[in-house]
Every structure is written in C-alpha cells, then in structure tokens.
Length: 455
Ligand SMILES: [Zn+2]
Image 1 (cartoon, helix red, strand yellow):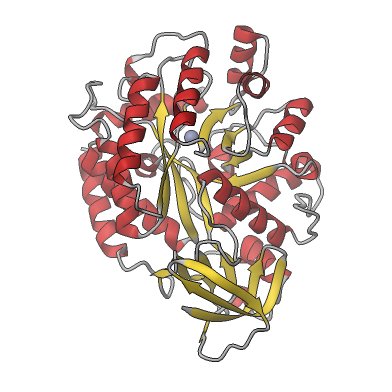
Image 2: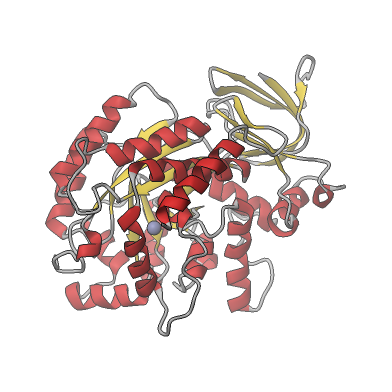
C-alpha cells in the first residue's frame, strides 16, 4: 500500500505531503515530500496507532452500573460490586463483551490493547478443563476484530500484604507462579506465528503477590521471554500505600524499585501516589507509567504527578482500564485537565519539550503504549508495523487546522463525533468511514451477553 497524507504525525513532529509505503504489514518508507505518483490520498491527517495499555475487558459490561451512592463509596466498595458481577460471567460472555469493546477501541483510534486478565477459573473457583480457556476467548475476540493484543495472564494469590488468605470473591483469580507460567507457555505456543499477539505476565499487585512468588514468576518468565512485558497495578489508592508501609516500611513503588529489576519491559499501572524520589527513580528506570485517567477519576484514585514526571523524561501510555470511557483523545484531555485544575494554570503537561500539548501527549502516549505492549508499533517510521489512524479532514473541528493545531483540536475540541475516520492495523484497514464492519454483529452479541449477565 502507498498512501499520501497532506499532514502526518512523525516521531519528530508534524510533516507535510508524506508518502507512507508498506509491505508485509510494516512501513518500508515514510517520506515527507516524496513523489506521490500512484499513492492513494488519505482523507485527512495521519496519526500513529495508539495502544490502550490497560484493559479488563469484562468490565465494559459493568460500566455505568456502579454509580448509585450507598454511603461510603470508594474503590474498595466498587471492587465488591465487581466481584459480585463476576458470578455470572461465562467464557462465551467474556468473548462477546471483549468483541464489542475491541470494536469500540478500534473505532476510537486504538490499534492495540494490553489485556490484564485475571478471571481464569469457573465461578466456584475450579479451573476450566483448559486452564487457558478464558485467555483464549479474549485473544479470539481480538483476532475477530483485527486489534493487536498483548495478553497478560495475571498472578493473584493473596487478599492483602503479608500473604493474607484470599477471600471468596477472588477464587476465580487464584494461581501460583508455576501454574500461571504453564498458561503463558501454552498461549505462546498457540500464537507463536501471529504478529498481532504477544504474551506477557502481570503480577496483579504487591497486595496479591507475596515477594517469594513474585521472584518465582519473574525468574520463570525471564527464562521464557527475557524481553517480555511485565505489568503490575501499583499505588492506585492511598489505603494501599499505607498498608504497604505498615507491612514493609516502604511505599509500594519504592518497594518494587528496591526488590525487582524494573526496566523498560515494565508497565507500572496507575502509580498514582508517588513521593518525589519514587517519581524520579521510576522516570529513570525506563519503565512506562500506565495512566488510566477516566478510570482513576471514576474510582476517586487521585492524580498522577505528570508535569514533574514529564520534566524528568518519564515515559507513559494510556489505558481505559474499567472502560467508562473508550476514547484516546478524552483520556489525554483528562490527563491534562487534572493537572490544570490542581495547578490553576494552562498548557502544563509539556512532553519532550513540545509546546503543543496535543502533539506532545499523542506522541508520548503512542511511544509509551507500544513499549508497554512490547510490539513494534506507535510510530510512523520505516520498520514499524503499519498501524495508523486517519482523521477526517472534513470534520468541522479540523477545518483550517495545520500541524500542531490538528493534534490540539483532536485532543481538546473534537466534541461528540470523533474525527477518527480510518484505522489500519498491520497495513490492513479495519475501520472505514468511522465504522468497523463487525459493529452490528458485535452489538447484537453484546446485548445477548448482557441479558444473561443481568439475568
Ligand atoms: Zn486495572
């Protein structure tokens, strides 16, 4: 394929009259001002594909069901409702919900997703005949829709710091390091030839994985895939920070940085509550902070110190986590607005020295998301996978926009109707005219699943 774009967002910034040539699912050339003879004209500006680096697919089915006040509502009371919801969740329903979710992600401009997957077993806690059953359902949903996936089977063993016994609501999640690595091996074998599937691991949190088990998991996975992605929930809630201090004397991120070789393979999901020293060390580690602004707002988590972290060249990507919002532009907007509201200033999240907030955040989130997924995406450059998003030049919000103001208008001013017009994954168009061809079928399957889930 050869596409020519009047504007394209390259790793170094916006460029004009860019010819993008692909072969075998990769870009072989990305050339500003090249001869465009024979190339197809893109219907608007071209962005790199964005990864959604943190998803619990089944939670798409709960979005909007937990907003009724019952007194002391917080993350922990929300979690109890989430556990109750799981009682009726079948593998078939998981696949139907994920299919709907992934269609929505693609239509919103996400080209890849990291699925942090902890619902492994039957509702009574017994394993399925195939221990990878539910993982396979989510990977199948990704294949049906065309989104790239990094699947992260989650290790979950304890209900709190110090290896506290798990509670009944957690019985679908439980395994040990050895059992989880068997699932990882089975999935790697099944998808070894599929360039759109990567398998990583996710120790759920320091609460759920005691130190010796964390060591076993990291050592075992390092032997299987030394470059493989490792994701962990961390420092999302103040109560968790206090409990970690009571248990170990250290804050969660401080403890992790002191006990594991955290490097660019790692994604620290949320990392909301950071002391200055933790923030600096995390930024220097090369790991990605997995920020989920809409979910963190919905759950009342707190605000990540983004401005200082970016000034220290910290890396980040965005995730939709509980899926109350499936819109990359909205996540980036919320990220910046949280910082503005607390600082009472404008245009504060300056990434990589770029004064355009939209351009800086889009490029940083695309690069950080690709790193967290462990996939060769997130940039319009030769050698990268041909994942791209084309905005509609005819969208009113983009009228007369050039360069940085395209990104700023997309992030801050697109409004109700997304300007995302086409989405390509590995050189294949999966969204055309703003629509995924599987949209109606996915919706029908989702409605059927919801009828079962809500009884
Ligand atoms: Zn999460």
